[in-house]
Structure formats: C-alpha cells, structure tokens
Length: 427
Image (cartoon, rainbow, N blue to C red; front, side):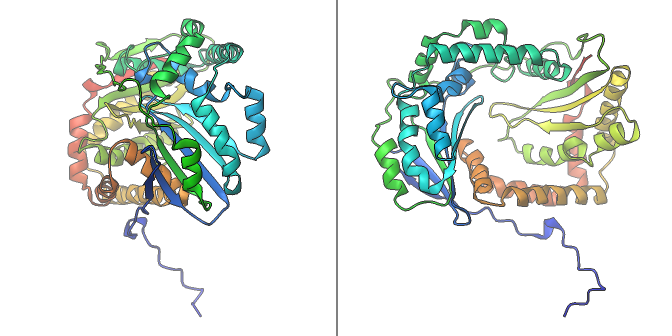
C-alpha cells in the first residue's frame, strides 16, 4: 500500500522520452500516396485530401478559396442540397479550407460508412459544377462577412501587418476586397479546378479505425484516374517586398474604446537552423499564458486582457509577430513595453527556473499533440507536406531540452534588434 500522506514525486515533462508513432504507407493504382495512422480505439475515420491548389497558384485574387469552398456545392449529378443531405444522412462532416500552397478536403465519418461516402467524394473531386447560383451566394456571404470584419480594429490590423511584412502582391500579404469578390466568374473556378485539381496528383492522409478492404475501395473510386495533368503545375517565384517604413498608426474608429497593436518582423523559414530555437524563445516572449509579455502588459500594467507572440510557419519566409488589443489611451505605452521586453531578452540571460518552466510547457504541449491517431496524423502531415522527416521532429525536441540561456540570449541579440521590427496601431 502506498503511503497517502507522502505526495508522489513530480516528474518533469522533459524527462519523458517522446516518440513520434510511425505511419503506414501505400500507393493507389494511379500512384497516389496514402498515409495511414490506424487505431481501433473508436469507430471513427478521418480522410484528408491535400491538393497543390493554394492561393500561390491563382492568377486572379480569391479564385483558390472560391474553388475550394464550392467543390461541395454541387456536381453534375448532385445539387448542393443533395450533397449535404447525403453527408448528414451518414452522420459525416466534410470540411474544406485553402491556404497558401495547399487546399484541403477533410471527411470525418464512422468507419462503417466509408463505402457509402467514397462515391460521393469521387463525384466532388471529379465532377464539380460550380453552379452560378452557388457562386452568387458565396460572393454575397463573403462580402457581407468582409464588411462586418472591416469594422473591427484587430481584423484591419492583421491585414495591414501582413502586407507591410510581405508586400501587397505576395500571397502572404495579399488581402481581399469587394471588387475581388465581384470579379469572380464561374469560368475562373472551372479553369482553376482544371489546373490544380483535375489530373493533379494529390496526397491522402487517413487516421482512425481502418475498415477491412479500404485499400480496394480507395482504388475503386480514386485509383483509376491516371492523375496526369495536361501540363506540369508551376509554382511562381514571388519575391517578398516589405514596406519601406516601419511605424504606422491608422485612425480607424474614433468612437472605439480600444485599438489593435501589431509588432513584427520577418524571420527565416522553417528550414533555417534557428527556427526550432526561435520557437522556444518566442514561447518565453509571448507564446503562452505565463509569458513575459503577458506578465508585464496584462498582469502588471493592466493594458490588455491578453497578448501573444507567434512565429508564422510559412514555407518561403516566416515572421515573428506580437498581437494584442489595448485601450486607445495606452496603445503607445503598450508598444513601448513590447520593445522593452524584446530588449531585456537581448541584454539579460533567461533564468534557469523560467527556462525549465517553458521547457516543461512545450514538452507537455507535444505530448498532448500526440494523444490519439488524428493528432499523430496531423503532426506527420505537416512534416510530409514540408518535405521533412521525423528527424526534424526529434531535433526540435532536442533543442527545447538542451538550448542554454546563453544561446537564447545570442539568438535574441541577432533577431530582436528593434530597428528590424514593424509596429502598427489601429485605433
């Protein structure tokens, strides 16, 4: 019997040997790669189709997002209503989203219903109709959402800081407008589908309870198409063009009580050797609720309810940004405190106690991210789409566990130079 009067020994998360579970892999008859993380814990299944159909490949603004969104809004055989009713009948959920390099179509369902849903997916991925009435609804809804969001300081600030960092014509810095939505035409979507979806090789990620005969079913509905595009998909070489000025203030809502603050700078992409170490340093700065920015600007000064810093995980170039909303009368003071925290990290080494706390936080986050087949698949998907392997994952773990205060101070000295940062207040 254990002695209940003695508290158990606390084990640091850094003491755990974290293992990234392996995935299974095969190819369909048409050489489409399929990645699986099997699990028999629940009778559920996730299928995620990833196409090279992000905004990077569009020649007209918003075409990539509109094409991706309207894939499930009608095919040559089924209307949008019929598609949605069939999906709901089987208790499934179909989600679509589009980013810069890739477009995603994700199905969540019960494993036993995958045979009924695969013909539906085949229809969506091969015969979308992009009906004019559905495009009209898409335009109306997105314009209405944009009009509402443009009233919000934080939305406006997000649009501007990305444009300042990357340039107005770069996919990372491009913003939407009413004119862009009005200019969308049915033939634009049809052309983009033919270019980036029809015949283009895709990658399929699957996690959950794998039913018997799934590979044969996938080949039946998705493996017969040879996936040979009419011409190779070319990724444009788009230069980053940051704004020449570094400090901005936008008067947005004179009757508002608070403003949005963004402070940021460009940073090398995820392939740079400093990237994993910067993720650790960023967490100390503002990447979790106990961060330095939170302790200073929220708890000590009371300028904001929350402040966070983040490191963009883009493929071409990353960026480090600090985001918060504060009272109009203290926005400038909050910006000053942000730069003070950046400078302190440059001038003083991080105490071991604080560093160990953040190490445990990050390792705990990784452990949570590997809790279940869907989370493991998501971790693998990010590596595979970035052409990385598990060694990248283990290098990050090693960096978090072993980076020294001196190394982090040196990193801050290199990248936290205030002259490299953009600052923006929208109030």
